[in-house]
Length: 363
Image (cartoon, rainbow, N blue to C red; front, side, top):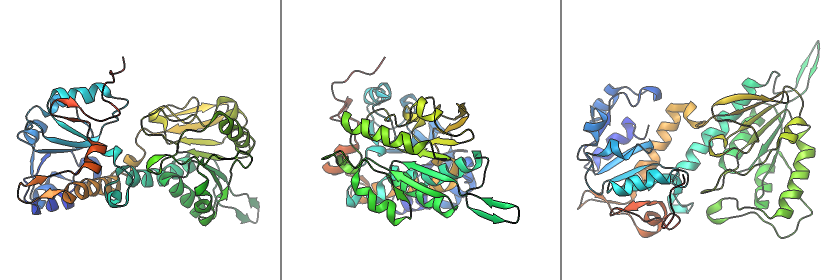
């Protein structure tokens, strides 16, 4: 949910009138009565959008659902703007101001507004639990009268927010954990969590640090060296979790079919990027597939499987964003250039984001 009773009260304290679609909070264990108690009105989607200055959503709704909103109304949601340019154009045509929360710049003052970080943290945690559930053996080493059970070997690929939480969770479950990333600066982070760093050592001058704290694309030389290193390491792993994403581009391919074939039967791979094209060859969002005896899992919305916590964090991200720019005199937010221009997709009937201007929607 993009709004919880907690954030509804806070918006009302700012002077806003809050309307919520009936039943919208059910999967996050939030009843309509909870919203009413917080001071919000509960109604149909069409009525909730009627006359709205601001619309909050998780996934951006079809613009036709917001026909009753005021001209120029702000819609804050996750848009997937590079994959759904047709929807972005629909928002421009409808005269709505689309704000893609996943494009929030990773700067200090926007940390509390960063939906990708809050959701990735939960996704990294849940990915380990789901992988452990699919794995037919125990995680920790166990000494028993009948013999010793060896600790599971877990390999994390990509050490951003999700990867770091995956390392910490796997370690708490007793696994033997290793991790890799194209950004050399993550080596110390991996070690600080008690995991073994696995890095390409013989390719000079490639740090892998892109803009905004994200990984950048690597050279052919680095990719070849990394593939060789990973291939030898992955064959000895019981569980692999991949977390790599590059904003605005399909997820980079990290694991090939031949690398899957090198793993032991019964091993598990969890692909956190399955919905963005997949880090793993053959992975499919929301399906568990078996490839060469290896179970490959990838949910489209892993954080959403922890709906109550995901909603609480996402809703706070949205409130922190709007409240930071709230203008008491006008009773609405006035976005600044640095953050506003970074996340604004449409305004005044046109697509305005620099990376989308002039691009035609894909067929």
